[in-house]
Length: 217
Image 1 (cartoon, rainbow, N blue to C red):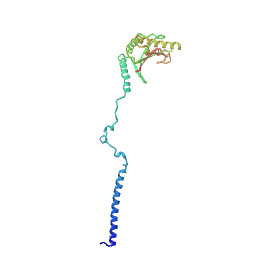
Image 2: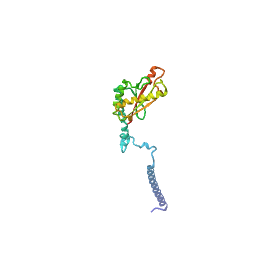
Image 3: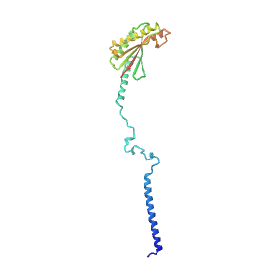
Image 4: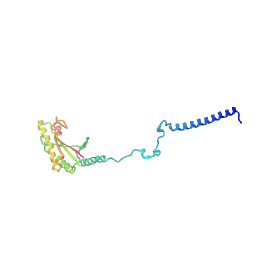
């Protein structure tokens, strides 16, 4: 039989043991819950580093889609332009490609005329006919004909002369069955000289017609 003093000590000791156990258990639960709430300082540290670590590895690279239909269609004029350039090269017709929304080919092979005349020479008529025979098969090419004159004569005369020169070249193309709806003429008179009008050779250079081919599709 325990005395009152020892009995009291036993109760106090038992109370403290139970209390310490509860505090330890509470601390463990608290620490366990907090551990789940801790956010890594940098989420990139736990992000997948390779495709193998991804749930769906195909997400690791950019998806490459086939070109849309309009992009594929936009490539067609280039093929047609190459065909036109091949024709010009085969027939030694000099040209240059100009920048723009459409494919524009300027023929540097100009057509020259005698002073005050709009008559096309036999040499020029030959290669114009050759060009016309090719263009009558190309419904996608428009032809712009620019007529020019030198400074000899009055301004009004030169304006009219440059227009007649352009019209004569147009007639040559129509003889090769190029549709008239695809041929456009302009006359610039003496206002766009390619050379100086102060010399005989310069004026000869300016009595000319230039052609521009525009691929419209």
